[in-house]
Image (tube, rainbow, N blue to C red):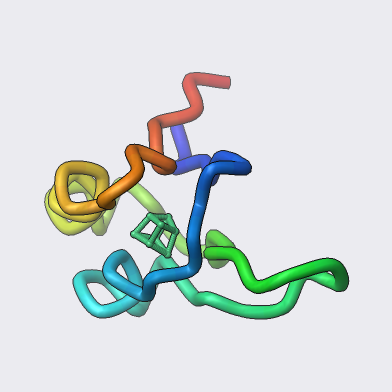
Length: 65
Ligand code: SF4
């Protein structure tokens, strides 16, 4: 599983502040949006869950694929 960022992201930086190893707000070519880094996501599960809870617009979820 890996975290997924939805279009509703408002680039507030909260997820990056909680878990900078996984989340990085950057320009995706169209706009600023949180981008998921290619790391061992299982290792950061607790921090990712915290970021999911803290995201003000509910824009992060676990992608089960
Ligand atoms: S906390 Fe949510 S809205 Fe803020 S940058 Fe992360 S995904 Fe986007």
